[in-house]
Each structure stands twice: as structure tokens, then as C-alpha cells.
Length: 294
Image (cartoon, rainbow, N blue to C red; front, side, top):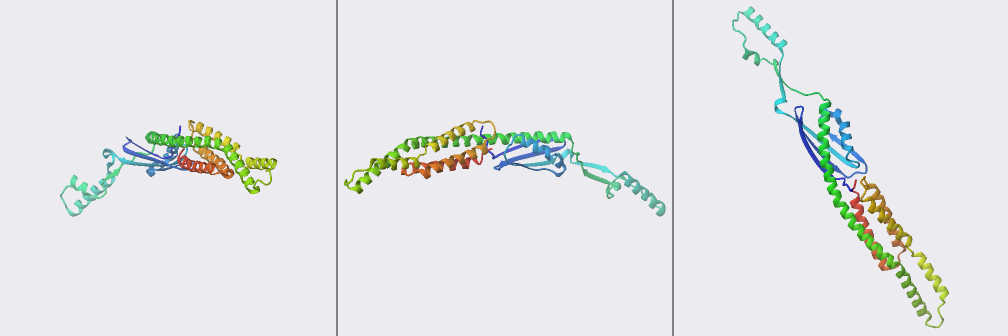
């Protein structure tokens, strides 16, 4: 099954006092590469998160963006520094004894004292539960990424199959044209020789046959056409493979292009040359599409 290397997926869930949002996008790349951006306190989970991505993505550059927001009920915690409160009260008693003050220190006065009551953001230390929840959320995002890559891959496969059918059609025409080219060459050579000799000297049939045979051998493309047909069959098979085939298809297109170039270099006729040009254009379009296949 053909899978594209470009796609996007999202997922979010709440756990351990966090609302977590994960975005995953992938683009073309020669190898597998995963980049993860996440809160620094969760950096310890990076390896596990990369493994989660690589279980589904075999090729391409994948960027993972993880953001976390604290839930309102768990964002802050209030703490009282009782040692500092005791010190303040002790200092108040000392002032009363020394200067004869009678006022009592009330709760309102205590709450106004600096650093006595502090609000701190409560953070849960990274643990196995957070790791499992993060990986599960990422797996959900990657699953959606994979679905999008498969949908895009289906369009790529359809386009490649249509172009492959066009190549096969032209291949049949080239097979039919090959012997015609030799026949036309023989007829033109015979006519030219007769025109030059002006019917004064009979045409040397043996010499003419030799020249035609040399031309036929030099312009023979049977081997190239046979190999090209074999490559078409391999391409059909790869398009049904369940494993990533992008690199194999890329190599196969190079081989097809090599055979077509050879046919073009051997061609001494406008008809085969025109078809070779069309095949090269189709192969180039296929190559561009295959660059996006996993």
C-alpha cells in the first residue's frame, strides 16, 4: 500500500492536572528523522516518544509539538511559613514588652507580612503514569497522521498507475515501429543508390543487404524494450506491496529512464524519437511523485 511522506495529525487529553495538546506533521526526507519539542520537565520522555513515532513512520521527517497547560484547580498551592510566623510573633512580643504596646497582632496583620504566606505552582514529578499518557496521546496523533498519509498515498498511486499505463501503451507502439524503421531505411537506401547510379549500374544486392543488416543491428532496441517491460511488471508489483517502497520505486524509475535514453540514442527515425520524448516526460512526472512516497 502506497503511503505519502507528508501529513498532519492532532490529539489532546487531560491527565495529572495537565491539558496536553500534540501536533504532528511530516514532510519528505531521505531517511527517518524525528524532532520533538516538549516542556523541559518532560525531556526524560523524549526517547520513548520517538520510539512511538517510529513504530508507525518508517521514512520522512516528523516534527512533534507538545504543549501542556495546567488545569485551574491544580495550578497553585498555598503554603504558610510557620517558622517565619513564630519569628514575627516573637518579635511582636518583644516590641510590646519594650515599648508598652497593648495591641494584639491579628490574622489580618499576619497575612500582610512579607513571605509568610506563599503561593507556589504545584508540579507533579515526571513518572511512569505521565510517560504512558503522553505516549498514548502521541500514538493517537500519529494514527491520524498515518491516515492522512495513506489518503495522500492513494492519490499518488492512482497518478503513477495512470502514467504507467501510458508508458505501456507507448511501449507497444515502439515494438511495432522497430521493424518498420528498418524496412523504411532499406527502401530509402535502395532508392537513393538507384538515383545516384541513374540506372547505369545494377545495385549490388549483397552490399546493400550488408548495409541494411549493420543499420538494423545498430538500431536494434529489442533488449531495451524487453528490460523496460520487465521494469513495468516490477513497478506493478511494488505498488501492491505492504512495505514502504519509495526508495525501490525511485531506483526503478532510474532504470526505466536509462533504458528509454538508450532507445532514444539508437533511434534514427522521427516516430520512435517522438515517443521516447513522451516517455521521458512521463517518467519525470512519476519521479516527482515518487519523491513523496514513504
